[in-house]
Image (tube, rainbow, N blue to C red; front, side, top):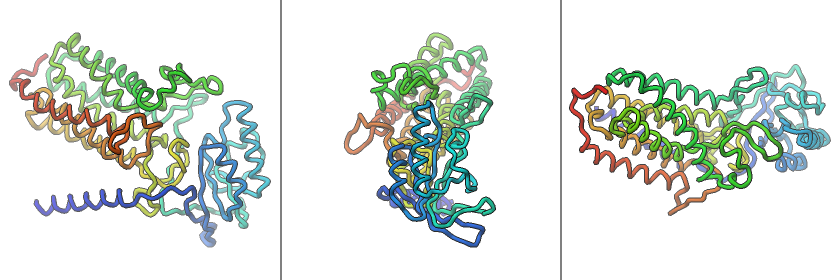
Length: 423
């Protein structure tokens, strides 16, 4: 048994060492190889950027064997003015002898109507002219994460990020129903818990993001703070792309207090212990949604690292588009492991009778995961709160971790007899 634990910690140490030792300085080009018909190899320099000015400048750099990966912002126009700008940029690439390719590296006619533009995926500057009959693949040391962001349902796009929220609340509801059944609590108390949790999560997460990371939205685009729209450059639907877990946590504390005192009439720590289990699982799904959206990405990483992923759809706020850590997945794995641990302790130990103990542990581990993953993450917007080299997410996590320790100590005063399990 000791040998098993020793091996586990050696593997963990090696993984952590590799994570921190493989960080590199930023460079705007990555290396890859185009394999044509399994017989010809073309070394290429890969470029991607959401920024229109950077994309336009790339047409004039005359880099031999350059492959440009286009993202949605490069080819999707929200207005006639934006379409004209996209057409001008693509016309520049055409005049500089770039080949226009689809997602399968098949040549496309450089006709710049919107319906044709949406078929463009790659721009290639090379003496090798690809033909429709060529079988072409891109090989890289790193992985490229460039999926669709959702499922098209006619005129409506169901984003995977929204779908992950549905999974989080749907599974959370079922798990809480199971918990209420185990604890012999009347199911009539489940619906209001779900409602108040939903309100606290969405409203708190949105306000938290704006307050901690984008306070300028209160002045520049006030409606976007509370509605899934933007009024910048015309009115258009955006969805809520900025949500902060710290804000959601603060709001949930208050909505759960109301639910505990006014509705179920139990010690709030009894509720917190149980809601922490589902929140941990929900947090994992939310981070998977961030992964689909190519947001909350990690810092640059050595392309040869097993963790290296290129996010062509990443926002320009994160800097150059090069291989990075999939920090969203690191957090998702941490939160899922926390869910498993809390569920095990709830079902197999007596800790659920010590009101607040599970919640304190939840606070410590959840925010410790967030704290340490922040070392590998790019900043989310402007860092308004910094201290001793720590970023906003880390500074905000420290009070929650301290609170967790205090709650675990304080929970000794709220022990329930094992037979007291009815509402």
